[in-house]
Structures are given as structure tokens and as C-alpha cells.
Length: 174
Image (cartoon, rainbow, N blue to C red; front, side, top):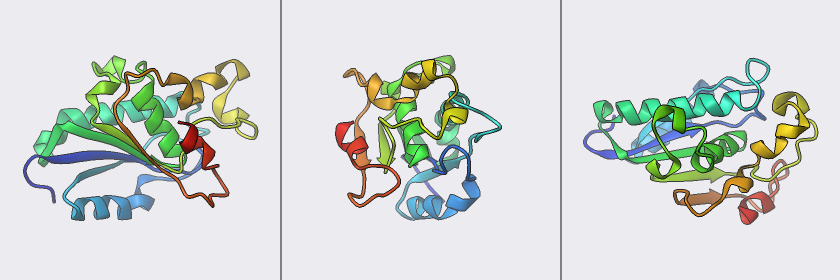
């Protein structure tokens, strides 16, 4: 429903990296569209179809697709935001912080107008998710907080202080 050069938001849903599909988050896309945003609720492979870093690579490919096609849908590719909730926020944060994910698509994190994280795990315990994140040696690569170096796009982090699934300190520390 977007017309003209409107901002673009690529949104990634949560689900502990194991569950979810974009159809469950149609409400997010609808609300963003009602606010004048070109909304893309992107799918990504969840575990066991993909383990880390596969789902982040999927996300980076979706972001590159959005940038390449936004104008055809009335969006401004220069105002491209990446957003996510919970596991999706961790994925969005890695796309916005770790340049290795966008590089194969000819992009860098600074090509993004910003990253929006809702209740995201950015510095979290892998315990219970060993199958999703693989060998312990690669666990640090899953922690977005490790990639903050001053060259990232702006971040907006929103987190409920009463969150019982993902600790609010993750957002505060990032």
C-alpha cells in the first residue's frame, strides 16, 4: 500500500531460532504499512533446517533483496531499516553489526538507515541452544554485542523491564 519514497522496514520474527513463520507476523506488516512504511516481514530458515549462521545469512539476503527491489514497491532504498523481535532482533542486530553478512551482497552495515531491536538477546547464554549455535568455538560469533565498533548504523532498542524470556540487560548493555 506504500506510495512514493517511503521508509522500508525488513522485519524478522522471534521464535527461539526454532519456530515461527512470517505469516504469523502479518499484523506487524499491516501496522507498519498503515503508518506509511513499506513493510517486508521476511522469512528465514529456522533450526533444524538451518543452524547458526545460516539464518543470519538468510536475513542478509532478504535485506539485500529489499534494497534492490524497494523502489519498485514505492520504498526508498536509502531509508532501509532492519528490525526484529527476540531471536529476530538478534538476527537483525548481527546484520547491522557484523559486516560479514552483508558483504557478499555488496552492502555494508552503514548502508542501513538503522536497526530496531525489540526484546533482543544481544549478549546471551547459549545453554539450551547448543544445537542451534553449533560448536562452542563459534558461540562468540552469535553475540551481537561483540561487533560494536563505532561504524554501525543507528540502533533503537526497546525492551520491557519485566521480560522473563530475554533479560532487559541485553538491550541496556548493547
